[in-house]
Image (tube, rainbow, N blue to C red; front, side, top):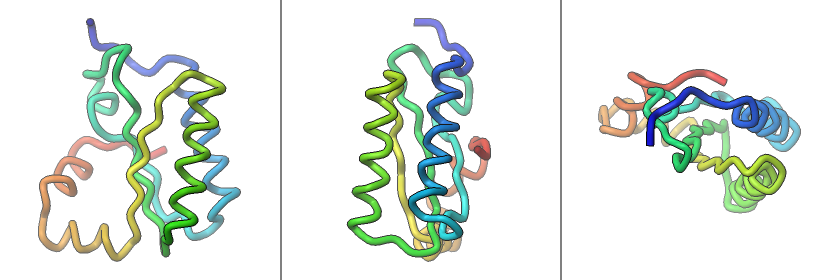
Length: 112
């Protein structure tokens, strides 16, 4: 399949996800970024939307609610969001050790 830019439904999905996150976590949402093949415009129709969610604090219940919000969006827009949820501390650790994940996100991600 040929790579393509984000569709209207995908952009709407990301906006809806951003709004849901702000409602769920408020000021604890520190960063929201699209990364992976879709951020590089290499994604295909089968590619999911990799979304990095950086929170001031995270816990299991909050992560579950965020994943449920992504699932609701999938059911509405048929857009597969794949959230990667990290705390600010976890993200800082990735930065400090310059992990491949951190390097890729910093190089290719787009703010939402």
